[in-house]
Image 1 (cartoon, one colour):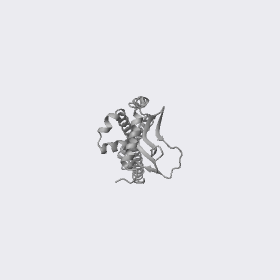
Image 2 (spheres, one colour):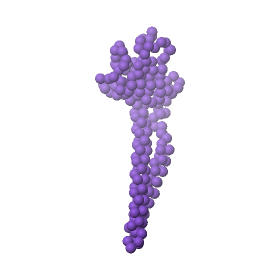
Image 3 (cartoon, helix red, strand yellow):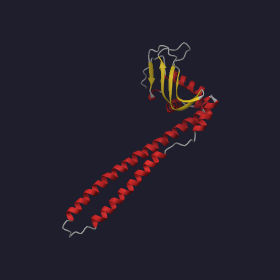
Length: 210
């Protein structure tokens, strides 16, 4: 079951149907299709993150090289040298410090690579939704209820509703999408129908509710 804070008169199905209706109107706009086609295949700018990874990998190579050289110096220490123990301990301390630094850089590389992966995956999710929106009218009605729900969840982030139905029969107040859409003559990530009438309660349906 979903945690829904809205009154029972707004069933989940009724809300989903209203959101579907909005999407149907969106996709009928010829400019909407044009805007989506421009988005599909557009390049994401990851240059800055890639440079960051490059810099960290260079640092990693330098530290690994320093560790190898230090290891060689330790191996070639003269055991007969009266300061052998001291020199060895100093080198050992430096070696441990290098291990710490290497570990720190490796963690940073992993973190930045994950960030890059997330950006690319977000782009793929966005493109999948956009591809589907091009054929929304043809495909959506063939979906199972679960597939419809999954699609709405991948496209719609949040829905606000009025507690009371408006005089025109409408109860949707605001929709926030996960990706920009084309509405009217502009690109937006949110649609709002707030006519500034007194609203007793605005109920936020978070991700899990749709």
